[in-house]
Amino acid sequence: MFLTERIEKAIVRATVLHQSQKRRISGVPYIVHPYSVAFLLAHYVEDEDVIIAGLLHDTLEDIPEYTDEMLRREFGERVYTIVKEVTEDFTQAEKKDHSTRNKSWRRRKEKYLENLKNDSEEALLIAAADKIHNLRSFLTAFEESGKSAWMKFSRERDMVWFYEEVVKIIDARLKHPIVLELRKTLQLFSEKARSVGK
View 1 (tube, rainbow, N blue to C red):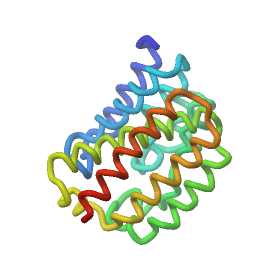
View 2 (tube, one colour):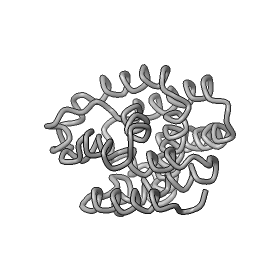
View 3 (cartoon, rainbow, N blue to C red):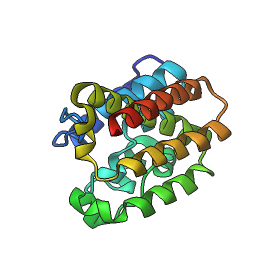
View 4 (tube, helix red, strand yellow):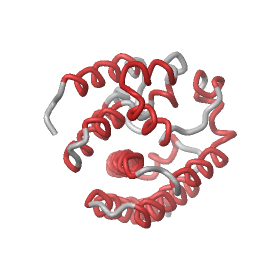
């Protein structure tokens, strides 16, 4: 997929919205993640709305001042619907203060998994690209820091459980080449997580 005017607009919007955030695993600017998700999607699909939704997939979750209405107005109903499907259910307090999120972690992840069972193909594509990049980030952290990479997370076992469940659902529901990459990346992550966890 080529760079279109709408995709460039989404790149700008995502960059501005995430400008003050950092990735928890690596500390790099957060925008690296939406860019990577969109780049993965552009490798596999020719759907402009899906790539835009990939760029904006964390905005409703992480940016309290960016509302559903703003997203819908700027990028249309279809992009909004796809982003909404992959958005975890955070309260406004959790959006503003990330340290409060740990208490609701399991409940939110279980709800995410339930939603994934009914999500559209477009949302499953974004979920797959999102998880591929997250898992690759874990693998890089394990290579650089070993077991101490887990120190940034309080749910070592739960994290492995969550990613395995996500992949199981996507694998059952989505017949697409991206799933092969997702399965491969999960296998590498599971093996590495077991070895560094010892």
